[in-house]
Amino acid sequence: MNTKKLVYSILSAVMFISGAVLLLYFFWANGYIDMPVPAQTEAEEGFTYPSLPSNIAPETSKSSGGSGAGTGEGTAETKQGSQFVNNINFDELKKTNNEIIGWIQMVSPEVNAPVLMSNKDDDFYLSHGSNKKYNKRGSFYIEKTYNTPDFNDPVTIIYGHRKADGSMFGSLQKTLEKIDINAQPQYVVIYLPNSTKIYHIIATIRHDSHHVLAYNNFSKQKEYDDFFNMVYSSKGSGVQLVEGEKPVFGDKILILSTCFKADRSNRYLVIAKELK
Image (tube, rainbow, N blue to C red; front, side, top):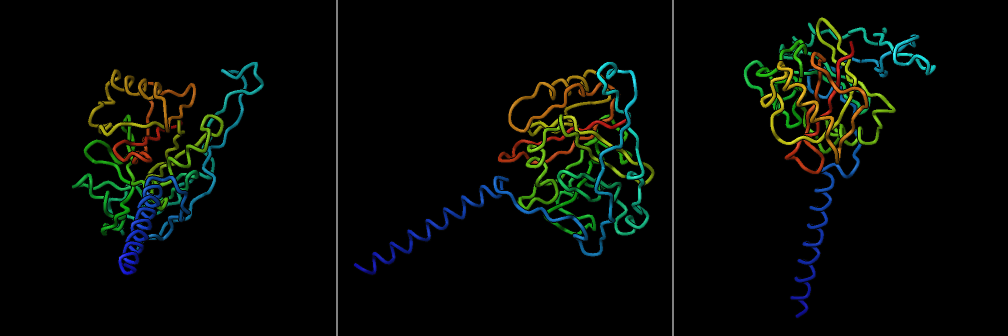
């Protein structure tokens, strides 16, 4: 009888611990538990991440007149200051991998990594690092089927995993949900071999699993307008919209796409408009 009780107690303890571990893993995997976010520097063998400026908010000056006339605030004019000098040696990077097409930088969350585009398989960098070696973390990448490497399409989408340890786009949603992007403007900088593009984050939304670029021809004004009308009518979890910044046909848009927290069947989209 004592032996049976002992076995029962052991099995009960094992089941309890297993359940607790599974519950903890669920909350961790779906982003409910904050994890430390390691800086993405020298993360892969044989690949070095260059040092970039920590402050990427564009410098602004106040001008008289415009929509700010009479308010004492003026109109902000974007000035691409010295912090946007492109100091990335793409010639050296391409010796590591000639499919490195650019570099993405954000401050909140900290993102500082190459952007890739496979010439043969759009999904290659879903499971490979920037050195082309298998890596379950993958890389930030765009799809050759839908986008060009110069980021001059009406809408360009960068994909990245939402890793539970906070790497890649793992803390993108968690970080931006804590920031009022109307009160604290956020930016994405894309460094390219021959130019630098600065994007102002204007919206974050939850989106279904439909492929945005496959289902929308953004070179057609109606489809462009319909999509961003949908964006600016979004409500619910994960949604933030910057007032007065809804894109108009001709604006160049960058979208960061990753899994939605707690529902991997949906996407979390960060929508940013190129500053002119």
